[in-house]
Length: 320
Image (tube, rainbow, N blue to C red; front, side):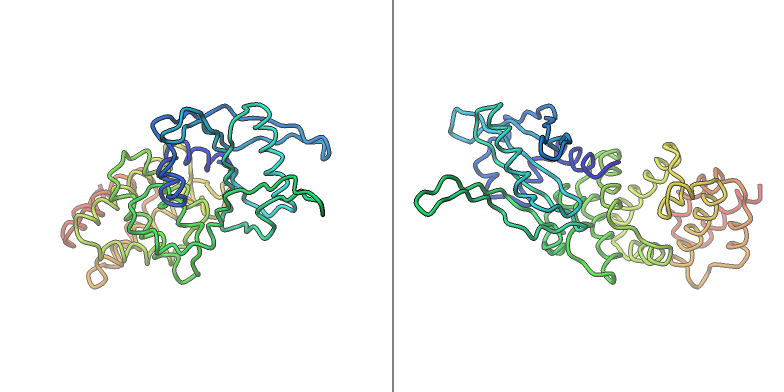
């Protein structure tokens, strides 16, 4: 799903939570019981001869006031020269149409930072005509650790776009999964949040194995909740035709690649969970199994296994 569409779905689902996480001062004044998401606006840029689509418009109210306001949210995934002019262009066109106060918000992902001005000034030596400002959210400038205790779905999905280093990637994903698990939301929404997270942070095979080891260290109840999210997502990838080789591109999603990825994941899990008991026979049995469906069937049983004997019982399905 394109960057803009991911953000739109996140914000239309969790708009109040988004404001709470990043603009709490604004949220104190906005009446979230009167939220209406408006149709996308398309404006023609006469100078550049192209059309631009406004990402998200929300009609709402300020607490204690009768009049309505429009909240305009613009998500930016790549640097753009004179971005502030684009924001003002949207602002002026929206004001022209709705004749209401407009609150503009710009979101910059970790792939994009905003180095330009956050305001537009039109002035003369003898007269000040206009000062235009907009809220500027640069996710890369936020420390992800400051959000992991908030249990906020918007913050959980956007952790992968905040400031972190390569050594923290596994920890960032683990904390995202823990946040989602604590929310106790339905599997479809949990899957969406995790997918948005992974759109900006992916782990290689070694990092995935480390993640499985860290999940096993969680308290049993929390481990179970996290693994339910991962198990549901695995089923969704299969139903939607998302091959297990998705991290290296959609074209790698052939059946052979899917089988190898699934087998490698199960082997890594067993090696992490039962490092002193895993046998060559068990590893070979998984590797030579040619039926991806069979590996899918035993996966949940392996994840639930507390002893090696239970693992061996589950692996009997490979020999039947």
